[in-house]
Amino acid sequence: MEDNSGSPSGRAGAPGEIEQADAAFNSAARNLDDLRGASSSRSAHAFLDMTSAAEEVESRRARELARDELEQATDRFASGVADTVEVVQAQEVVASAEENYIASLNAHNLPRRASLARSARPRK
Image (cartoon, rainbow, N blue to C red; front, side, top):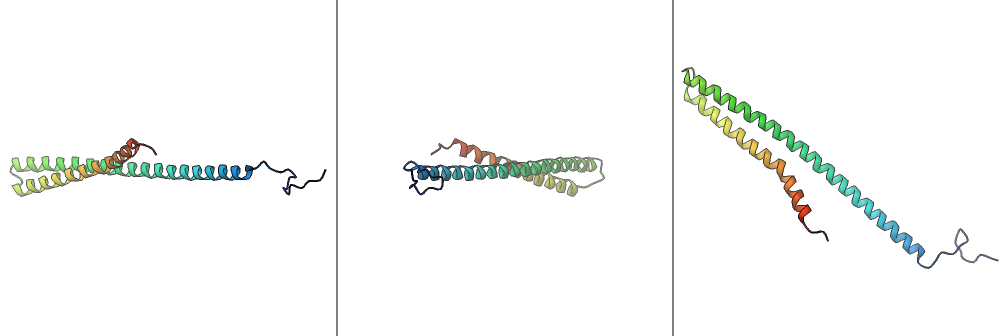
């Protein structure tokens, strides 16, 4: 019996087999691309979380140091060693440190809120 199928293996495929295989391959390729994108996105979010957490810790420490400086300036003023200018300057540093701390908290929580909003959206 002679092979007239023209296929390399000598067997003719069922109608549409090649199209189905191509479709399955393309679907798998799209899934792989989606997984790569999701992995990259998760890595980026983790990095941003880590960075903002480090900034929060740094700003918390700066806030504590500013408060300590204000306490020392107030003590020096109370004992007559310093004037009100030093106390006011220390208060300004505390206010600035508080603002930086609040900004770092917002920066830390913003990606989480965005992620929560994305997860709350209905999937299509």
